[in-house]
Image 1 (cartoon, rainbow, N blue to C red):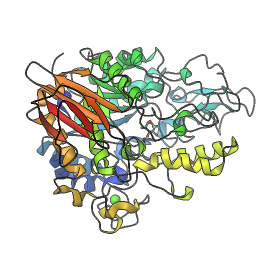
Image 2 (spheres, helix red, strand yellow):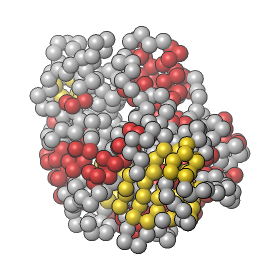
Image 3 (tube, helix red, strand yellow):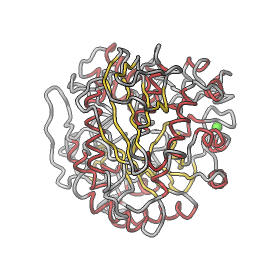
Image 4 (tube, rainbow, N blue to C red):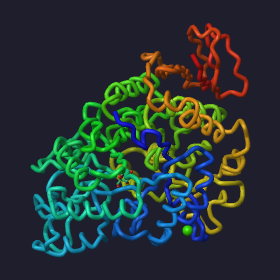
Length: 562
Ligand code: GLC
Ligand code: CA
C-alpha cells in the first residue's frame, strides 16, 4: 500500500467544550485550545481531531449543527479557526474536523424550510412519512437515545425521522440536491485548510426504504431493529459518491464512525485501501465487551460490568487485524467523548490507577493502526459520580425516564448511569490544582471531577513516573527508533484464548519486539523463552525479570526487544 501521512499520525481527540476556557464563561473555546498546542506537541501528538465546532444550539454539544459555515459562538469565530489552523501549521501538526452528515439541528435553515410545507423545495432534504394513525409513528423503530425514531411535524400531518434526539432530524441521503450541498460544504472546509474528517454516525446514512415495522422484544415498547438503519448495503454507493465528489484528488484523510452493527465482515464497505472509500474506520467491537444482554429492559451498553474480557478483546484485535492488514488501515482507541473513562472502564481507578492506565496505553498503542488518544486519558482521568440533575447529556435523561418506566429500580438506573454515561468523559480537562482544575476562571459548564488536586497535567509533566510521561514514551516508539516497526510491522498474537494476559509480537525486516500485559490485579506467571533479551519499556519503576518465566504483577506490562 502507498504510504500516506495519516499512517504515521498520532491523533488526539479534543472535546472543545471541556478542554480549555480562555474567557471565563465556563466553556472551552478555540483560543483556549490554541494555548495548549505546545502541550500536545510535547506529548507526541501530530494531529488533532476537534469535535464539532460549528454553529449549533448545543442540544447535543455541537453534533446538532445549525450552520456548517459558521463557528459556534461559544467557541469563537471563523478568524479564531483560521488562527488555529495557522498555529497548527507552524508546529507541523494537522487538524481533523468532525463532519456530521447524518442529521442537522432542527434549527438549521434547511429544516426550518423543510418542515414548513409539503411542497417546499427542501421537503425531501429530510425524511417525512405519514403516520399509521394520528398518534402512531410510521414505524415502531427505537432511536439511539431511546423512544421512537419519529416526531410529528407541527405544520403538516407528517412525521420526520430522527435517530438521535427530537432536535436532530435525519438528512435524506436519497436526495441528490441535499448531498450536493454537503459536498460543496466539505470542499469549502478543505479549502480553508482542514486536513481530514471524522465522519460522524456514517453507519446510519442509509435507511431501509420500505419502512417496515421491526420485531419488539418482550417488555419493550419499540423495536431495536438497528438493521433498518445501520450498515445497509446502500452505504457502498453513498460512500463512493461522497469520496469521489469531495475527497478525490486531495490528500485529505477520512475516518468513518461505523457504529452499532458494523463487524469486520462489513469493514470494506467503509474502507478498502482505495480512494473510493474512507481512509479508515472506527469500529466498536472492543467498546462494550464487558456488557451483556443481561437486562433486556435497557439497551445493551448500559449492562456493563466494568471488567475487561481479555479473551474476547484479543479475538477482536486479531479479527480486525486479519481483516484489514494489507488491504486497508486500522484505528486504535480506548476512549472518546461517547465512552466512559478507560481507566475506570477497563483498568482500575483505585489503588492501581497509575499502573493500569500505563498498561492500557502500552497494550493498545503499540498495535497496528493509527492511535486516537482522548483528552484527559494521558493523565488517567476517571469517571465521575454525580446526581441526576448534574448531568448534561440528553441521552442520560431519556435513558433514565425509559428505564424507570420499564420498571428498573432507581438505584440500578443510577448505577448504570454512573458507569456508562457519556458525561464521564466530558468533565473539564484537569490542568492543575487551582480552582476548577485550571480549566476556567468562571463557572464550568459541567462539574469538574473532585479528584483534580491529585490528577492533573501540571503534576505529571515533569514526573518521570507519571502516566503522562509513560504516554510520551509509548508515542515516542511511533516517532523514533521503532517507527517503521510499530507503524507498518506485522502483528502476531501469542495468547489467544488467555483470560488474563495478552502478549503479541511486532515484526518487520529489521526489528522484533514483544508486548506482554496483565489486565488484572492478580499476579500471573507465563513462560516465554526470552533469556538474554532486553526490557525496553515497563510500567513499574523497577522491572527485573527472570526471562525464562515471567511473573507479572498487578496490571504489569512490559515490552521486550527480541
Ligand atoms: C456520534 C457522536 C455522538 C453523537 C451522535 C449523534 O455517535 O460521536 O457524540 O451524539 O453521533 O451525532
Ligand atoms: Ca470560553
